[in-house]
Length: 354
Image (cartoon, rainbow, N blue to C red):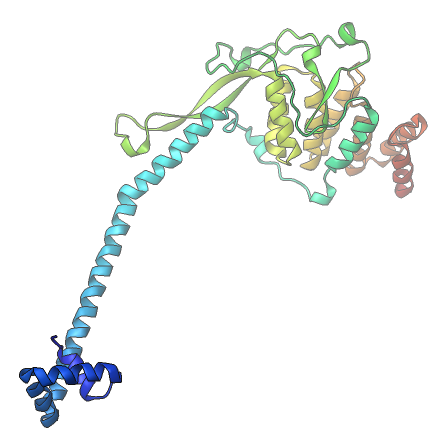
């Protein structure tokens, strides 16, 4: 068995266990060179000190070399991360965006800059959606609320390229009276009351809107002649599917995206009750009370019995926010006399205005 200088020094300085010392001592009995080395170190302390210093230099050199190797590996890793790694992450990011674009064609819908500029008012001042749902269920009994919303959509597939130009579309006038008199066919989306326009005659059943799409190849392989970019594309989708996404956005509090959709609907169906009422609630939550009042007034002007009581109630609240207290009192009197769902709340609200 061979022993290093460090082993011998540790033996001489008593740094080994008794078992390890016994091993060295037995080896020294059979190994004349090892025995002479031990004796030489004992008789020459200065030489022992030099050997210890030499060992320490070797250890420091090894540590320094290991540090250099570690630093080199780190630099190589950083380089590949910034070069190939970065490309991989960018490629994955873009591929993911393209995948989302394919699976959900509405995620990159172009939102009007005017709507993007709106900021929500304080949450406690916003419309309480749960109260709206309770009121709607009370006002429109007969359909059980469901969170699944497993509704049969129109059999209109998404068309990626359409011939229609948004500016050339005719705004459709609904045939409410001839089709349904004063009764409205309805259902629920995300526990929110909606007029079921699948059962109302319409010339069209589609919505045309604009969305942003990525074009070109992955950025990891692009060159000067083939750059990836976002382009604006016109898309056709069934009204019902477009509305369902808007209602989902509204229900989770994304009033910016929802309002953009309601305004798109109104640009093509000017008397759409769903877009008028829920668009009004969005405007209210942005503190745009004049615009909200216009939408609710639009609901009241349509001869179809849907959202009437709710719209009148929120017109009152808009009048108060706008400082039109006398107008608010007059409307509250109408609500109280009607004896409807909001009559008790109207009594309390009117007292608070005195």
